[in-house]
Length: 640
Image (tube, rainbow, N blue to C red; front, side, top):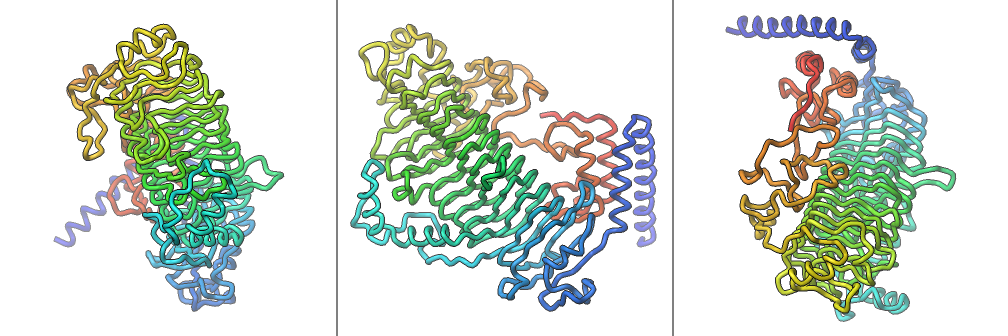
């Protein structure tokens, strides 16, 4: 029987080899020579690549083998070239005089052959910091980084407000700066002293300076001013599958005066970011083209995601954000929202996120999403925003926002200031598009368009209001009324005169299970097929004939017609997650870009099992290559 099993295995490998040759020749005939050559080059490089080992028991005069390892990762990195791997043993390097503080300068892998720095055999090496500068194509994986900072016990878990003196009471943002400063020094000295020390004694756990194509994956980083810092015009940095906690900021970008941007095309994917003293993710100083996707961001003291100082073209997709804003009373400019775009640049998109439980006792913010002093505006689509102390969406001195297909439910409770589903207050909050939103049971009303803003919007229609006992629309307007509680009177009066909300609905949306925070809708919901398709070029989610109102497109029996296949105008669906074999970059095609990813990782361990497509052994081998080649050669287009 053993012989039979071996024979079957060898037969499978032989068959796979033959299939591979057939596919390769077919690809050659299809003029794909360049990609085959890249693959063969990657395979040859894999055979020629070197392995180095680093251990606390090692010495930099050693050969760097597993039996004679180096001591310093910095030294090992200087020896490594394209395609080489540095294996780090599971020692605590942090206490060593120099081996725990790592600087890697001027080291470069290649596209097909990056330099891999990785914990050996799932061991847990510990460092104080790792700094990469003027380098490219380096992967850093599986390392624990613990900084020099310390935390008082009361701040190790930021899941409540710790006050040294509760007798002070709530400190409102409207109070003078001197009054707030005096009160804060009594109420929150533990928090403020800790933050000030961490700010004035800056440190970063994994820091990327003026570098490109760096991957930071599967690490645990804590006790730094910035857990992961990306700065000085770094390009194509990926931060993936990390635990970033007990820092001041989980991820932080920065630039020097002479640089055009802090980071470009950074990807922040599948991280858990929590218990940070200020921000979960803080994009500063013209971070451009950042993609923030599929992260769990929770229990951060102020804001979960901040997009500031000209940062632009950010795409915030499918994240879960909850429980933040605990220490907003003592900010320099009080007020913390879950996602804050403040002084932001153009083309920032907030799409398909679930946002809840943001608090702000300063009574200034606590919003799910805010555009703050951002005249370019932001695009907020397909988000479920509920149970926040502030408004669901707020615009302050911004305008030009696109607010489409969101669900704003049960926001504004607990604040001493009136808060709404959507709030626009300043004279410059004009030219907004507000369509296809469910606006449900928010504390003080549905939409506030103050200071005459109701007549200064680009488009307001196809919304579903359900605000029993509170006004659905508020704000000074073209008539003498300041708020509108009766839908018929509003629709036939001021709304008709202004040409807004003529296709909107006043009805219970019939959520699937509100008590369980399931804000999809039942088959009988009045929101189904009642939206407008006018903005499908902006919101490219999958629809069935007519888009629904709300964040989650209904897929039950009430949606008549067939779902449209994905294409360049229709490739999203709210919170849907679709897996297509071989589509590594999620562009819905198995193509050359995916082929290059496979070549780069061939014969390498796939620690997250995210690339392995054939036999679930978490290792890319010939079987995976054959399966991929079949998909590639057949021109697969992924379907949803």
